[in-house]
Image 1: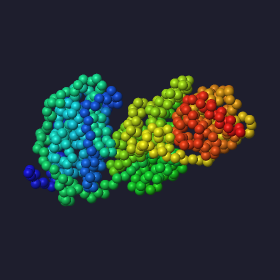
Image 2: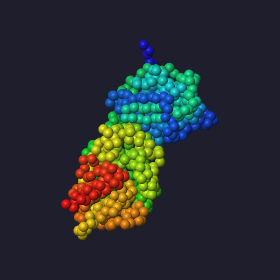
Image 3: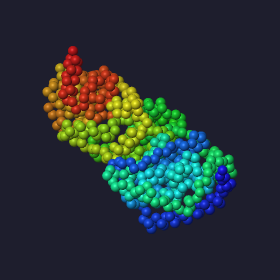
Image 4: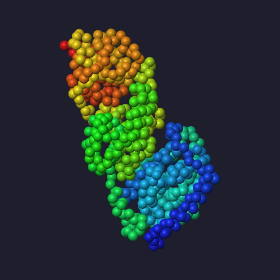
Amino acid sequence: MFQDAPHRIPTRTSTAIFLAKACVLQLQRAGQDRLNSIKRHPQVVDRRFSVQLAHSSAALWTDPAPSETWYQRGKIQNLRVAAARLDRCTIPAGEVFSFWLQVGRASKRRGYVRGRMLQEGCLIPAVGGGLCQLSNALYQVALDAGCEIVERHPHSRVVPGSATAARRDATVAWNYIDLRFRASRTVQLSVQLTPASLNVSLLGEIGGEKTASSDAGPAVVAPAAAVKALPILNDHACESCGQVACFRNDHDAIHLKNRPVKAFLLDAAWPEFARYVDSNHTSADTLALPMDGERWKLPQYAWPTRGFASVDAATFTTLRRAAQSRRLAAQGALRQKALLEGARALASQLAKSLDPNVDEVCVSQSLLPFLWGAGVLGGRRVHVLCSQLPVRALEAELDRATAVHPESETLRDFRAEAWLADAEDEALGYAEKIITPHGQVASLFGPRATLLDWASSAAGPLSAQLQPNETQTILFPCATIGRKGAYELRDAVRGMNVRILLGGRVLESEDFWRGYQVAFAKTASFEGIDLVVQPSIVESQPRALLRALAAGVPVITTINSGLNANSPARFVAALDSAGLRTAIESQLNRRQF
């Protein structure tokens, strides 16, 4: 049986010598790369890369020992940061891919933390530790896709759970121990973390030329890494070696940090979501929100803040977003773009509350695509507080309505960029649970959806006190805008002896209601209202409809409004003016008797 040489305890002197040697090699490599014009490749969203050339999947949690948990959390955080720099990296045909030039130096400033790393014969906590799991996976897909391996270094020791024994490993150390390869066709990397695994794929374009043969040539192995693999060294890991005199040993600190938590990253507060958050957090969890709405008496941010381990607020970012919003029109593309930019800035700020101990994230939908694009959700369980249809489904509804009402500018004034819809789709597909009170949204996600009850209210703040007469009154409890079903209501009541009470501004053409009996709501009573109608094409919060139902006023709407199918409202199909007219006539005739 092979016997390993006696292990020497590292000292500050031996470590300083090791680092000095490494520094010399780093300077040499930097100079070589400059001379050889080795460069970083762009990350591009391109749907043409849909042919999977090779795939690797490896478990993130490889050791059940409690002493290993802290190391593995740090490793996953480091993989998360590096994956964000590698995903969708597009490597042109014949050009060299360099792991370190693509990922960059693993430093605290870049978001890397302490993970498990092999150095001087020991497994120690080090910033960037664990990235070898990613380099292993990249080497494996490059091999399987038939790429030319330009540079690869095997590990000097066999670590449990590694690919070393099968000779499919590739260690890396900034920047002189690198992994490099090239392909004969343009390829793209896909690097994703799930809560359980690291998934790496090499993708090619449809119709692209074939890859090089898998025997394209041997890897270049630098002398620094060309050593014989030594046996397992678990007895030289900081948490188990027992060498407490070693200056690098921090056994106690490891256990102090070994605590899983949940983080809530939230935007606008809905009462349904606030109730859910209040019932589903523990005293170990983190809350990150725009502002402390309870403290500043701001209902739109009134999240429950008691009982959390920490509460972080992005107050300045939120105030700036509010100031910018006030300067914008009530409707239009500029407003929508500004709202998205505000959500992006808020997501970036709140993401700072995610430390490596966060295993589960509950996130507001408005922040989701930006957090996903930043790569901070990978490797975590994700629950989404969904407040509206996904962007792609929402815009499909608007496109359908635009085809029926091409004269409406509001139905076609804005469409999100493709990357945002793609990011949201990917994140929603990844999410473990979708939480929403919106019935139409919940129906899209099957068993993953948790359908909340809408919070009801007995108040009815959108009507006028009317003198009784023979003309019946219909309340349209919102702004006159195409997505709320304004065109369908106008068409449905044409020629009928009814009054239309409007709950908001007219955002379609100024003469939209010409020829109709129309008034604006001014008081907070449903007195004199015979029927509430809102045939929504797109809706997120049906608050006015809920108030009307609570007040006992009949409601006609669509399933797109968000009301659940068991609601006492009467449902009609969206964009169906004829069906809406039939429902209105039936209800008004019933009210006369």
